[in-house]
Length: 249
Ligand code: PEP
Image (cartoon, rainbow, N blue to C red):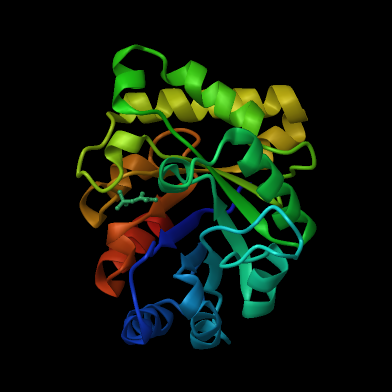
């Protein structure tokens, strides 16, 4: 049985004032029946961890370096995320792949150090609009999966997020059939590579313009174990609607 997960990605949004949203969330869901994770900017990570202390909500990072430590000005290691209170890290988000030229092998190296540090790696995959229109979606996702996911992956340390790039922050969402097709494909690929036991235990999140109004429909799709949410995770009220929908799914 895979435990459902609602994960929020605050991206480069939020200063200390934003912690009040997390306080409200923690007040509303001290013991959710699903996993709830918030990934704030690194500057807020420690305070976010303190804010949710004593509840079942957890916090995570949005990136880490592939090296354990060293001369990498401005970067953050997996151990530093753990030290600040994280239990997970988002890796290979399309904005990192686009803004920082991250390739599949970079994501895989980061996932390896993250897992070694005890973090859950949320590895993001997703196609562009051009790739979808050219009917290349499954090829692209297949390549990202085999290139970005390390061999040491298990149902405990790996979560895969399917995030079509054209759906992120746009209000556009694939059809439920399109989401189901990709999630079933990811599940099959994981089972083939890691065996049925591990392949079936990895949680698969959908990400891209998830809102309280469309969450229930998306959560009813096969092999959707939760969501990675950007914009709608910034306000406790919006994210609460998504958590509610997932708790009922
Ligand atoms: C994201 O960037 O991970 C994301 C899913 O963003 P949004 O929910 O705003 O589309």
